[in-house]
Image 1 (cartoon, rainbow, N blue to C red):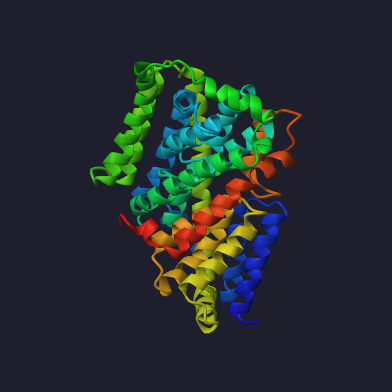
Image 2 (cartoon, rainbow, N blue to C red; image 1 turned 120 degrees about the horizontal axis):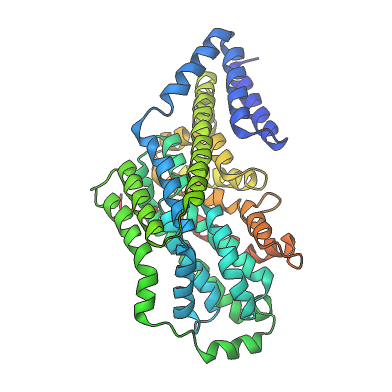
Length: 441
């Protein structure tokens, strides 16, 4: 058997192991180790490669961005910033058609600029937005679907853990990836708003339990919240966003420094609001360690797996196949996005990145595709998987957090379909118009 054929078999084995329930890190390590051993017929080389990879993969100063941004996001979550942001958006947008749905999208957009994790957004706004939307006559399933659908903004609007992981795997600038995510992220948020308004006009019964009563309630007006109170609630998160992203985009901070400054700012915010006692601080530090170590271990495993693929000659062979098949850059991107969408139905976001990017990024680069543009396409396609059954982790997060026996997980999946449609449109638009992602690069 040739090394190339063996490489394809090992990829199939990797996907099979993950589907059967093996943790992705162990599957990557196991398949990488077995592949190098079989291809080079050397157990010693496989062990040495593992030793070298374990150090070289995460020894760079850049990798400190991961625990720092995770810490910042967790500190912001315990500071009740998400609640304040939603309350301001609710007061401003109550008179707007589907006002609370739009407020949820707006709050998620702002919250995403300091958390970078979709699951955190889903958990926070399930507790905040869903009860409020139900109280104002929205269907529980629609409210839950709105939270799940808009939570995906957390992985596209910078800073984003998926953008960081992609930047590491594809060896492109993390700061550049953050910049590339701005316009697509805002475009996606705008698309959600337009879709919610259109849905309210076309199918009000899908949105409200009693459309007539909801319309009358909307015309009555919003809550009485003065400009001073709004400013007081929004000022902390706005200052934090300006501090982190402003410093990063202006070139004053490196991504690592921006993460450090953001984590310190989030700590001051939590202490100022008196929302961080000794017990919560310990929980935040423990969660930061668990999440960061998990991600860094995955990156080591992915690097080892990537080296196995290179030894097998797989990226070059696939690139030749793509070239010979007549696929142009657009054809390759659409084919690749289709595979990622299918994988999103059975695998989580990080697993898809770890499996696909080491194979696809070299091919995209060889075809002249800008890797920052390719990364945004990858992240949007991967994020759709957060909403698609049977995996749909954002949907299950909302369902478990809500813990309402009257709201089935199937109903939430149904309510996320309009969000998936918007994401597919944005994915196609970004594919056909690369400047949406590369305009500021």
